[in-house]
Image (cartoon, rainbow, N blue to C red; front, side, top):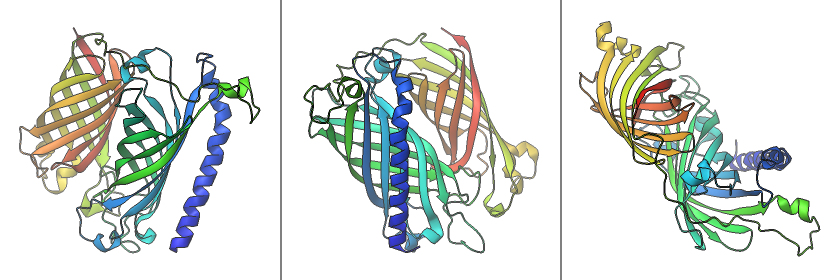
Length: 393
C-alpha cells in the first residue's frame, strides 16, 4: 500500500468507528437511566500519537527508522454519584476506545488496529484548570502482518495476526472552555502475544500525544434541544475533592492461584507445535486500604516447552519467590510482581515479572489475566487462571 492509501484507509476506519460511536449514544441511555437525574456526563476524545520504536532485535531496524503515527478515539462515562467506584478512584472516568496506527512498512507489520477498555485517573485537584491524568488501557490488537518464513521473514517482532494491546498515557487536560479540553502528554504502547506464537520480540512504541476532548451532558437533550437556547445544564461534572481511601474489608489474606497457558518455541516458529504451561502461586497479601496493597509469595512453574533443551521432565518445573504491589479500584486490581528463581532458572534469566489484571468475583474468589516474563521484560507466557482466598483476617 502507498502512504496515501494507508492514510485513506485509516481515515475511513475512523469515520466508520465514529458513526458506530454516535449510534451507540442511544444505547448508552439504558445505562443512564440508573444515574441521578442531575446529569449524565460523558465525553468523546480524539488524539494523534507519534514517536519512536523501542526495539531490541536487529532485522527490523531499517523498517522502523521513521517511527510511528497513530490515531486514538475514546468514549468515556464520567460518574458523579457517591459509590464504591467514585470513592476508590476519585471519580475516575472509564470507557472504551479505538486505535489505528502506521508503525512502519505495512508489508512487514500490517496496519494495526485495536479495541480496548480504559480508565482515566485524575491526579490534580478538581478546581485546577490544567489537570494531570494517567490512563491505562488494555485490549486486543488486530490486522497485524505476522512472521512468515517465505513471505515475511524479517518480522521477528510479531508471530500472529492478533496480539494483546496495552497502553499507558500520562499527560494533562487543559480546560479551554465549557465543553472542550486540550489534551497533551506522553504514552507507551505495547503489542505482544506472550510467546503464544513466535517470533515475539513484541512492538514497543514510545512518544507524544496531542488531542481534544469534548464533554457533554445527555440531560440537555431532555431539557432543551434548541441549538440557540440559553437554557443549559452543566456539560462537565465538577468533581469534589477525592475522599480518603477507606479501609479494605480485611487487612490480610492468603491467596491460592492457579493458571494455565500455551506457548511456542522460536525453533518452531511458523508451525502448529505448541506446549502447555502452568503457574501455581501462594500469596500473602497486606491491604493498606481499598486502593493499595503489597504481596509476598511462592511460585511453582511448569513449562513443557523446555523439553527441547531439557529432555528430563523433572527439569520442566521451576520454583520461584516474588514480591508485588497491588493498585485496587472497584472490583479490579492492577498487579505488578517481581520475582526470582530458587531452583535453576533453565535459561530463563534470574528475574521474572508478572503484570496482571485481577477481577474480584466475590470476597473469596477472583479471576486473573496476566503475563509472566523471562530474563526481565521478555515474554515467557500469557496465563489465565482463578484464585481463592481461604484465609482472611
